[in-house]
Length: 257
Image 1 (spheres, helix red, strand yellow):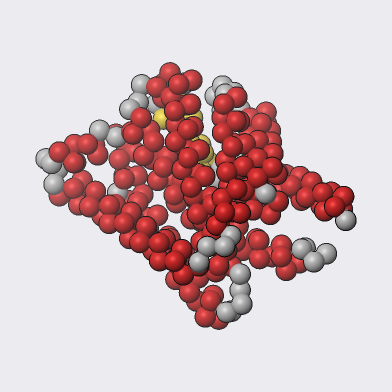
Image 2 (spheres, helix red, strand yellow):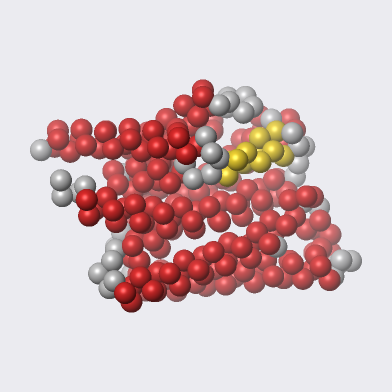
């Protein structure tokens, strides 16, 4: 039975890696100073699925393989082995955090997430007001120092807050219509698992990219990290909901097979 389960894990992980590679071709690379700075796409859904379904080991393997194969198929900039290391680490951390948050109280998680969304939305709104109406303030000057990615600190945070609130509303509707649905309870736990992991890896990758790519090294750390961090928050919220849906489908149609 253990052998059968191991084969199933390997087969499903290979399938998830393949799907991630297909989706990766439709991602969009944002360049900073002529150098690749962050990728916007949904291939991470499938590497995160491997971590959630099969644990840290398979999550790390899936993430590492997608990073390596992705560079081989469509290289953008130099190959940096440390980015592969952080990719593997991200899958491992996600797997461990999913195990850790498995028994957390869903009500408390939802309230904590709601507070978080309100805070980042309020920060975005304050930044928006400063940029639009208080142009001579010290804070506006600090925001303007980020350059053309300044809007990530205002519209970006507002968008992240709005998207998250929409998902909470959808969750409440699902819970009302389908009280036994696991999508509602899984979403927040997946969000925490992938969100914490994502912010850690984004921060590490920011240091790595600035260390290895001269064009990025000329930027201030925060000027480079802030748009990457906001993008990570937005993508994690969306991806976590997709993963929670896919996890529900897997449990319903594959787990008992």
